[in-house]
Amino acid sequence: MKHPDRDSHILEHIFSYCLQIEETIQRFGDSMEVFQTDIIYRNAAALCILQK
Image 1 (cartoon, rainbow, N blue to C red):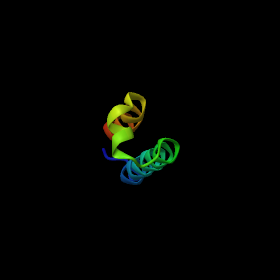
Image 2: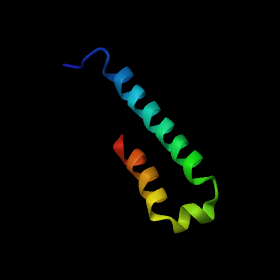
Image 3: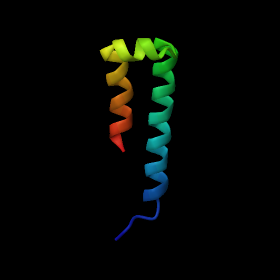
Image 4: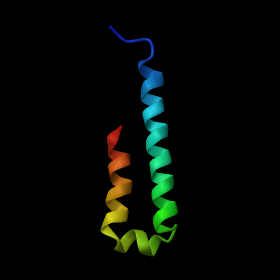
């Protein structure tokens, strides 16, 4: 049986991960070169993407 708020709960989590990626970009900058060379930056973004 599907919980009635399941979809909204999933969307809230997705939105939360988007906010976390935004914070990561603010911390590391929006340079593609930095993203490509900094493993911590890539891992931080990838973790949020892989969650849902």
